[in-house]
Length: 68
Image 1: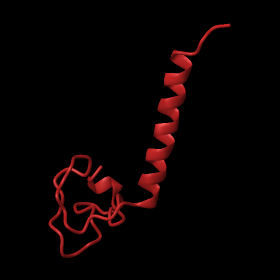
Image 2 (image 1 turned 180 degrees about the vertical axis):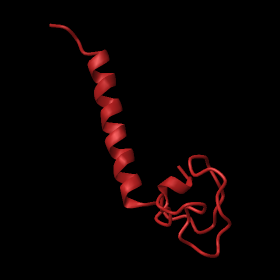
Image 3 (image 1 turned 90 degrees about the horizontal axis):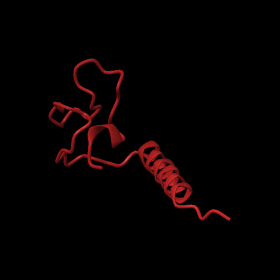
Image 4 (image 1 turned 120 degrees about the vertical axis):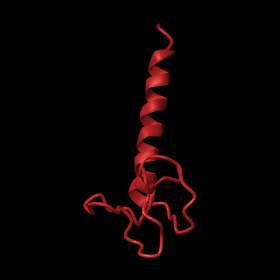
């Protein structure tokens, strides 16, 4: 997802502008999709997506598991 929270430049500790890049416009909402040209996917975001995908697949498999 192309949102600030998934970017390498995102820093939640910054008070009013979460972006570490000085040339980008401050985001209004870090959770929603945006069109920032400096967006780079964070490794942490990618790992979180993989973990969430695994958990979702496991829940789906458990829901439709065949009973023996």
